[in-house]
Length: 305
View 1 (tube, rainbow, N blue to C red):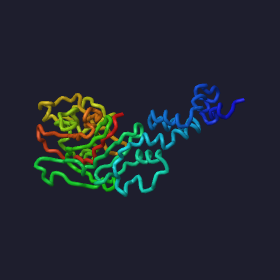
View 2: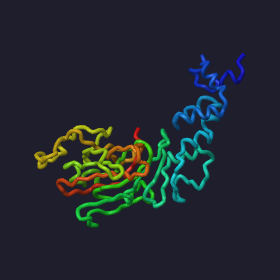
View 3: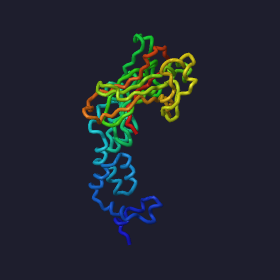
C-alpha cells in the first residue's frame, strides 16, 4: 500500500497521469521545500505557475515569497498614489504583486509614462504616452498638431499629426512599437503611405543600431514586412527614388482597436549600456510631402518574445 508521501499527491494530478505515476516525480516530491523553491526560482514566472498545479508541495514552493521575490525586479520605480493597480492596498504576497503589475500598468511619477511586467520573463515594459514624446513638424507651428484625450486611457494625452520620439531602457532585449490610429479610419489621413517613413533605434547617442522602412497607411495581420500593395504608391510617386515596395514594415491591428508598428529592436545587455539613453525615431524628411490624420497614442517598449 502506498503511503501519502509515496503517492506524490497523485489524486491531484490530471486523469491521464494517474495510471502510471512516474517514479521520478515521486522522488521530486521528497525534496525539501526550500530546495524545491530554489529550483523553481531558476525557471520563469510562467513555469512557476505551471509547477503550482503539480501537487500541494509544488504549490507551496511555487507560490512562496522566496520564489516571487526573485521574479520581481529589485529596482521597481516609484508609482503615483492613484495608480490603477492600487498599490495602496498591500498585496497579500509577492506573487500577487507580480500579477497585479503584469495585468495593470502602473503610472509613474510625472504621469506620462507607465510600467508593467512581462508575464513570461518578469522584465519591465514601458508605455510612453504622446505627452512624453518629442513631436516635431515643419516649423513646429502649434497649428500643425493638437492634443486630444484618448477614450481608452485614463488621464493620458494623445497627440494627433506626426510623431517623432524618444524613449528609455531596461536590461533585456526590447522591441519598440508606436501605437496609433488614422483619422476617419484612414479616410482622413494623407501623406502617410508614400514616401515611406524611416524608423531607427540608437543607444547611448551612437549610430543607429536598427533601421527600417515603414508604411503607416496600410496594415498586415501579422505585422511582418512584405510587399506593399502597389495601389498605395500613388501614380505620381512611382518614378521617385526609393519607391520599392519590398521589405517595408506594415502596422498590424490590435485587439483594442488601435494599430501598432514596430520601430526597431535594441539590447541593453551590451557592455556599458546600463545607463545609456535609448532613442527611437520615426521620420520622413526626404520629400517633405504634407502629412495629416495621424493620431498617436503612445510608444510601447516591450520584451522581445
